[in-house]
Image 1 (cartoon, rainbow, N blue to C red):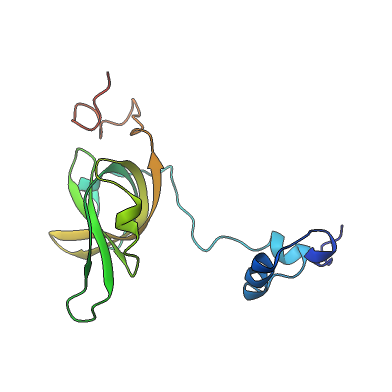
Image 2 (cartoon, rainbow, N blue to C red):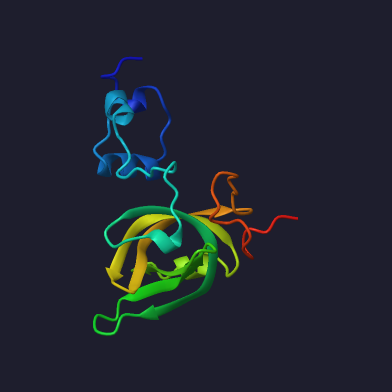
Length: 155
């Protein structure tokens, strides 16, 4: 196999994936190998909800609550919203044009969220965060964010 070989020379690709690869302009082995993700998360820098500031990219662990869908006031675009709480504070989360997000997750679910902090002073929210479901919140012995809170109690 050479980097300049077409993918179809070496792999059986169904029509759905052929269309997707064509849309991404990926035809050769080289193009597939060098197709990189659009955004990266720095999961080593986990922050507490209470310490977030506007414009910051954030990764937080917490518990979901108040999930619901609604429409924007003027544009009538669908919005899914809810809250994430980690023991230090509670912050609103919003997904624009993704109403299904409120139905995919349930209140009380533990998650890792990665996204950008938006809003105004006193009314910050996490905008269109990526979500990863967790069985429980990770508790780092060096990090006191979750210790001695209702969310972080162990045992």
